[in-house]
Image (cartoon, rainbow, N blue to C red; front, side, top):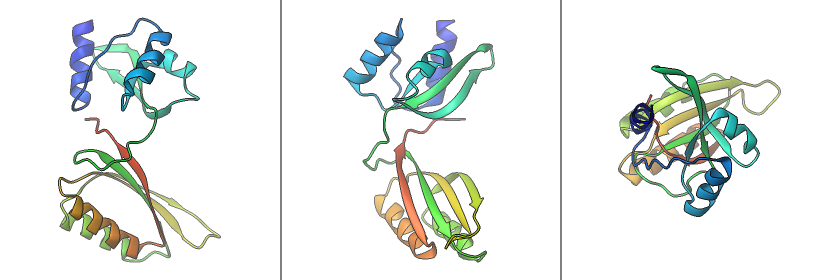
Length: 169
């Protein structure tokens, strides 16, 4: 069983260190002492510490072990740029226009991989929608800064929501 779990965890992320804990107290002590970027915990354990942690991705499962469920948790976003991390941009857009195509064109031009896009419509606000763009940071910081500047000029408001580790699907 541990071999299957290890293989599953290794398939999720880069630079992964596996540390098996026998109790919730040990988990919390480890998270405070080594200050990890994220931890993968069984759902039952994660619920007891949910007030102090951010759930990045619920419901991870191993197909060969369907009864085991995990939460991916992080104590806080990473504040420093590093190639290969993920970021989430929130862009407030005005009326339906071609500005969103300009955003995607710029991301494509800068070779930035977009992994997810969501749009939420609003009424009675200065903006008609907020678009959430999840992307993997490129090797070149200048490319990212250039894309962000272009996206900022195309949107009414832009917010970068920190940087996070990449988990493979």
